[in-house]
Length: 128
Image 1 (tube, rainbow, N blue to C red):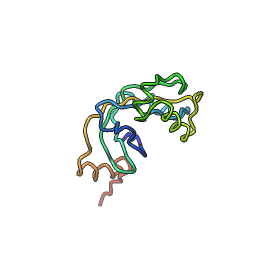
Image 2: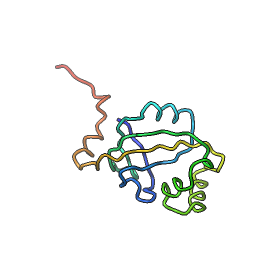
Image 3: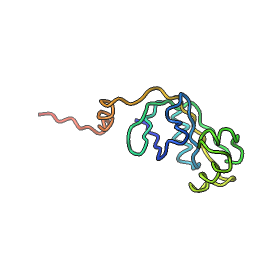
Image 4: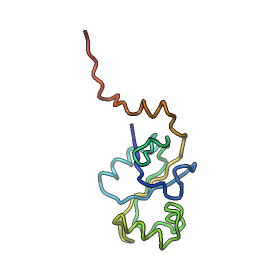
């Protein structure tokens, strides 16, 4: 199961039909997310399952090249304040970032929350 983790719901974005997340780039993330476009994800907010979403797009660029409006909408603050938030996460203007765009499909139900804790890929079958 694909998961995307969040420690903060900036601008309440996880409740929007379409939302982005901007993260620092590395080769592992690039490979992982590029292979998951059009795939479902379970968004996790502070360790709790939040919603099902689909990865629509993955784009890589320098933070300084990302449109200001997107940066402001992603964080929910004015541009200068948003850039301070990114700086706290180690992202400067020249940092290469991944912009992930998701489509929210639906909230996680309580019963799904329990079922998703089971690692179905590693269940062993015992024959008696």
